[in-house]
Image (cartoon, rainbow, N blue to C red; front, side):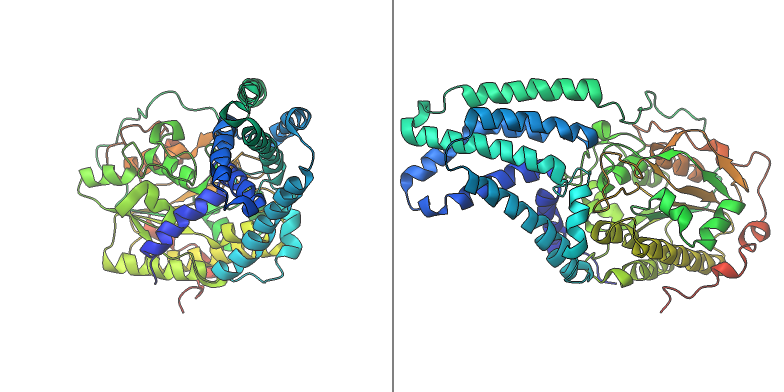
Length: 506
């Protein structure tokens, strides 16, 4: 299997500058401003005036970088735009506005939704016929959130153009204090809006993990499959005989909550450190300082001479470094998950890690490129089910599951739009989570609230490893048997014909 190259890792980080909403806004505003004034590039005075305009606009851009205005808060962005129109709009500004809107939809619908996905995962070049509708509905924290990005970049462009014209006419004193007072007013406005109305962030666990660890490890191995971006409600509608069997013969957590913001690198970082973004330091897919700031599960395993491997995309190297074995994400979406699962088998054969975490990406990529509420999404979930079944059977045949825990979950869900996830819109917050193995209760459904920050301490508990130093999640003890183990025969032979599948073995 082809690994993610150094170029792909760098390209992934560069892409996040445009993909993540926070860095996109200032980059897009600056780029559109320069494009609009391209005929003046040869004038030395232009660059001095443009630099001054950018300097005077930076406070406003900083406010919009700091505050996302998620979900229903997006509507409050129109008031600053109306104020900017009244204060800063000048004659002849309409061409700038139309250029910005046109280039935004070219970037999101044509470049990103059509060309990028065609080259990277093989979607049709006609994808724009659906993608434009998804962008208009999208609500996540990416640049594809039109209802957030449009009022943000239009407001900033009006201020920047006004500052540029003022500087061109009167020099450094031209813009005056108006743009600074405006940015301050927007900052206070944003602070109050978020303080009063941003009420749906998950409650954080205030204490560190304090479960008394067992006298000996409960599991010799842990195999964990993460179906990236699997919407829990859509999973229930998909054809998933193997996952249904896992639920029946294992333990399902019916109210497992992800973290905020629900971005892939953030969620994985929280799962495998046991704590929240403010503590582990990964706050979006755009990672400014490489590596989590706290101990990870992989660090805990090393303390007892055990090894963990995460088979995942290049983005996750930014959080976990050498503990991640990367795969290239530049391949047809239909072959992505089968290729990943073949590599998972090879890792077991080559190094037999004590903990193996595998990220399946096709469901997430289908949600992003084609939408969650279409048949293609259900098909990818069904394919993931078959691949997990095949991998499980392969492990069972080799005796790898005799004293192993097997976990299947998602890192976050996906909402309507371009498979949105980030701000916890409908379909994002609660994720599927199933535990299975001889030390796991059979047929149990845990309906109490739980959080994905329990993943790291639970696996550490099973493996007899210390908890990561900042782990806050409680161990998922409700899933653990208290009176001995079920035999391997009862657990691992009961799956029936549904797991005898050759998907991914070719």
